[in-house]
Length: 78
Image (cartoon, rainbow, N blue to C red):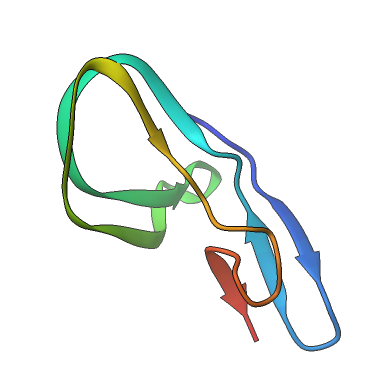
C-alpha cells in the first residue's frame, strides 16, 4: 500500500497525517506495521506496535491512525 502523508505544523510542533489503511478480504495475522519512505530507499520512518497479534480471516483489516493534531498524530516532531 502506498500513501503520501500530509504535513502540518504549529509554532512548536510539526506532524504527519495518514489516512486509515484497509485490506479487503484479508486473511493474516500482524503484530505491527512499518511506515517507510519509498523515495529514500525504503528507509524506515516509524515502527507501529499493535499491542498484540491482530488476526483477520477473509474480512477487511483496517489500521486506524490517530487524529491529525499536534498532540495526537502518529508522527510528531517538537
